[in-house]
Structure formats: C-alpha cells, structure tokens
Image (cartoon, rainbow, N blue to C red; front, side, top):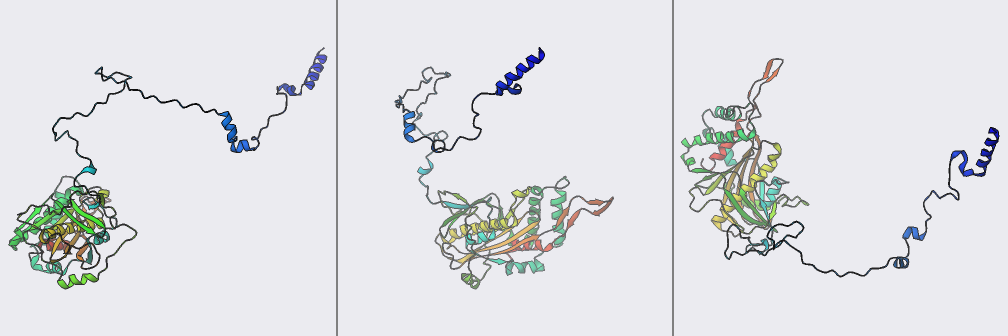
Length: 434
C-alpha cells in the first residue's frame, strides 16, 4: 500500500511541472525581466493629440476677493482671526525721537557719485604702492638729509641717553605690571609715553619745544579727486603733535621741479581703490579737526600705536606704512586747503607732516611733503615722501629666564638694543626747531 501511494504521488508531480519539488509557480508565459522596449511612447511620451484627448481642461474658477475678518471690533486678540491694520497716527507736530526721517533717496544733500573713503581700519592690499598712486607721490628711501644731520649731531642728545631709553623699555616690559609677561596692549602705550617724555626733556635746551600740544581723538576730513575717483580721508587717526610754527620744507625747489619726470607706478589689473570703503558722502568736507583760533594750528608729527594683542588685529608693517602715509597726506591736504583755498595748484610753501608708527618694538619713520593739490592728472609736479622702515628698538625682552639643567642660560633683560632707533625718534621730534 505504501508503494502504491508513492507511485501515485510521483505521477501527479509529473503531471504538474510547476509544483515539482514542493515549489509552487505560476502558470503561463514568463514575465520579461529587462527594461520595456524602446518605442516612441516610452522615449518621448505620447503625442500631443493623445494627451489632449486624455486630459480634459477644467474651467477656471473665478477668484472672489473676501474681506479678512479681524478682531479689531472685539478690541482683544482672538485666535483664528486676522490681525487688524490701522492707519498711521499723525501727531500734528514733529517729535524728534519718534518721527521717521526722509528716505535716503530723498535727502537734499544726496549725490549719485560714490566716494571711496580711507579710515583707520582700512588695510590696503598693495600697501605703500597703492598709497603712492592715490596721493600722487614719489617715494624716497631713508630719512631726508636735514633729519639725518640732527641724528648725527651729538649736541642733540640727552645725557646718558642710552641708559634712559633702556630704563624706559624695562619700565614698559617689566615694571609696569605685576604679571610675568605683560601683553602688547599694556606695554606699547607705556613705552611711547616714556619715549615722548625723554624727548620733552630737550625743552630745557630748546625752549621753542614748549610751544606744542598733543591732541588725541580728533577727527580729520580731506577730499580730493584722483583721475575719475572721488577720494576722502576721514575719521579718527593717530595721536597728533601740533605746533605753533610749521615745519620748513624738506626738499628744495629744484628737487620739487625734478619730480615732474617721475612716472607713477601702476598695478593693473588691480583697482587703485581696492579695500577702500565705497559710500555716499553728503558733504565733501575739508576739516583739520580744530576750530579757528586754535593756538597750535600746524600739524607736526602723527604717532600710530599698533597695540593689539592678537596678531590678526594688528596691521602688518606694509599696511601700517600705507596707513601712516594716507593720514599724513590727509592732515597736510586739509591744512593746505585752509591756507591756499580748494583750487588745485602747486603750493608756494609746501606743507610737511611727519609720522611715526610702532608696535612697541618695531618702528616706522616717515616724512611727507605736500607740493601740489592737483591730483586729477598723473603728470606734473608730485608730492614727496621719505620712509625709513622696520627699525628695531630692541630684539627681545626676556621676561622669564631660560633654565636648562638647573642652570640659567639666558637671564631676564633687554637683548639687542639699537640706540640709533631712538635717535631717529628724537630727531623727528626736534625737526623744525633745531
């Protein structure tokens, strides 16, 4: 009986091939496993007439504007209702704090021409080269001979000058604070004040040095046109040393006339106004920052302190020299327009402004002479600038001694002191008096 049942099952399996070996399969032809055949309908879709018959266009329903239901009548907030909009309330008189001002386009002094402004935070990409083109100036390396003669004269030095300068450096780097190593924000201004105090000691020998005044936080504004650009130097700048008498011209008339043959360097394709702030200036001012009748009307020397403790916040030496040059030019131009008017011309008596920049260790010296106020064309007489760059007062101030194997290899103190740097600092202070 068991053999008969097994034979019957095998016969049934042979009759149904889809159910062999316990697998149930569908009957009929096998489905294609590949992609559908490429026909015009599968590649480009049905023809437009077929789509037009398949898709019936519904009639457009007219949009009926409905009034928004607000909670204005209920006088309190109601969820689900729109917020009411009321007309602006007119007081009938102008309130100075709550009255909206006119639009920028409707201002009476608005001008369509943009102005490129140089302020104290501008970092020029091309540095001194860009400042030379903007101010139409010829560069002379080193300090002028008149200043160098003051440097080389032993009569223009203090008694025990080198020791006093070392004491000033030690006061700024070691004695001013109880910290082990003071940051630059502390020792840079202290060193500048100490060095300036040493320069004031020469007042006993030269009484005319007492006719000076140190100005801080004053604002300068000077406007000029350079080819097709409208430029302006304005805002806060360095500390200005004013005097009752101006600095005499540094270059002779022959040297000034010889600048006509000088060709200004360009840096195409870079724009000469790169990194300058482009704004709309309502009033093109020329202001020295001081009122009429100020007893110290002549700018003498500008001092720039790069005392930022974080390196990215400090100006690089090249950018600092460009900044010094632009603000020295701005002070000279504002003074020249006050003396000789705003018409562009060659000045009968050039205006000289000096500039000194430091980060507490490295010094930059500059003497700028404004010869002309005609900046539209690059031809003709140019201005002159003398730059003595990267002069170290000292190489390093060792605040913490170096110890190796319990032996002090490098004690604390000032290393690499350069006395000539302070001589130049003092010479620029005495220039115009000696």
